[in-house]
Amino acid sequence: MVAEAKERESVSAGLQDVRWLDGASALDTLLSLRARKLIIFLLAVFPAVTVFFFIKYFGVNVAFGDQWDFVPFLEKMFTGQLHFSDFFAQHNEHRLIFPRAVMAVLALLTHYNNVAEMYFSLFVMCLTGYLLFLICRRALGTSEAALWAFIPISLLVFSLKQSGNILWGWQIQIFMLTFFFLAAVYLIDTLSGSWKRFLLAVVSSIGTTFSFANGMLAWPVCLLQLLLEGRSAEAEKKRFYYKAALIWGLIGVAVCLIYFRGYVKPMQHPSLLAILQNPLDFINYVLGSVGVPLAIGTFVFPVGVVLLLGYLFLIPYYFKAYSASKARIVLPLILFSLISSLVMAVGRSGFGPEQSLSSRYITITYIGIAGLYIALFSFVRERKRFSAFAYSLFLLYIILSMAIGYNTTLKIVAAEAVNNDLFSYCIKNYRYQSDSMLAACCSIPGTVTGRAPILERYRLNVFNEPFAELPEICNGSTSLFYANTFNDLSVTDIDKKVFIVDEDIEDIQITGWAIDEKMRRYAGGVYVTIDDRIDVPALYGRYREDVTQALGDENYACSGFVAIFSSEVAGKGRHTLSFKVIGADGKGYYVPGQKIVMDVL
Image 1 (spheres, rainbow, N blue to C red):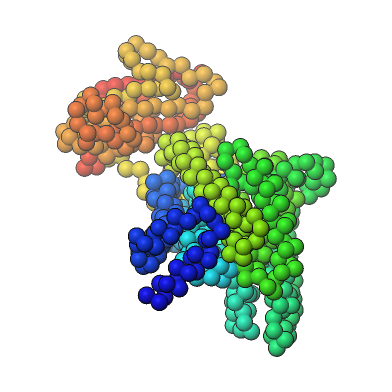
Image 2: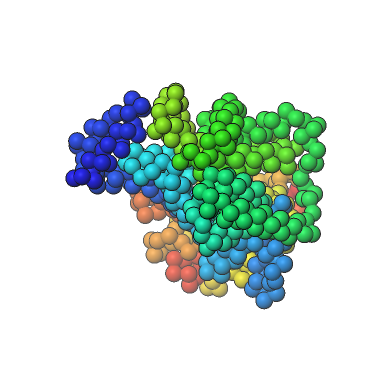
């Protein structure tokens, strides 16, 4: 009872200037302290659970973009030719030693399943959230009010606005960058003369450096943190902090020299002098990357301006009041986030300021927003002028931005997810696809045909679940089959129609449905046969509501198929397309009577 009474006093002291939050006092009378803390815990954990189900429903195991650059690394690993230089090798501006190590282990354990990488990213996000909870506790104390204050930070950490990172396993690197940096900051803030913690902070800083290029900023930012800690420390500990700062600086210089050994500026990146040619793009890029974590629709740059002004106020404030402030740990968070935006703008503003709005950078820049939020709450506790109003407004905007962001992201991702299985299908069926189709699936033209055989050889990624093999035994014909469309044209009166494939049409797409008529179950698969000589596997198992309505059986809802292949596979001239439906037991196949005739010009 005494502990609960003290807790209530702490809550009252922390919230009395935030009038619209006075409803918390009503909870005191309705619920016990334990029940209230359970509610806080559930609210703080809920965003992480949301990300879990986000991955569960929208994560797709298909290599995309930069992941194809990882395939030669995997080939070396499986042939026993992997060396440290392969881990250290430059990728764009980055040295991905630790992310490559994680992805290599996951590839061994899961046959390079990209969804497993997404779940690992979630694991790192949870560790990051816990670190921010510890940082929040350092800055704001352990009162119930401080616990309530952590919930918006959890919303930032697990924001679905980061969908470009969450649903792309390759982006493990950015989540590792954030985690290792925050670990270094927290360890330095809690040093208290411990060389063991200092060593762990050094390891964390090395971890963030070799996870993503922005991690190099941890060295100057944390050096400043050490110097400020030394300035504010008691006389007997000043020497420790200054000695630690000297060692930190020397290690940082050594690490950066190693990092830039053999470094080559990425050819596809714009000149670093682009900021002189287009200074407005540089400014817009900075504002965009600063504001995008809290953007609502296209309302980005004004948010960036407000946040930037907040950072520019807090940086000199904490430099001056570092010794006296309990929330001083937010300074390195704000500095790292702001300097990251500046550095990214220098290196990438030549791509255009629109690139700063990419969801991939949110994971880096939300750190500064978390720092600003903690600082405003600490000002409320210190009863600074206008702090309650500023904090209340900021809190409401964070909640509004996150809510709208969740809704918008889910709509966009759900719309894109309709074709996710097609991407996987086209990669798995790469031998029959056009270059333009493969480029659309992986974003890097010409890469798949050269590297997909590596994945196929070791049954990695999409090739871990190959197409159903076409049996040798033909079981006769089937009537529960129909090909509906040919390149989006309805197939009607098919015996009298010849489909024309013009020269500018690269891809042929056929949709339909099939059921094992004898066993009254889903078929084992569908193949499209070109002139009785080439069997092209189709993607089977697509949702077809019209089939369930026509047959009056919900069990046939996923009996649809789609087959996509390049017109070059057939070649020029007239061709006859027939179909083979694999039986549910996989022991034989049926040949429907329907055929499609096409002329490739």
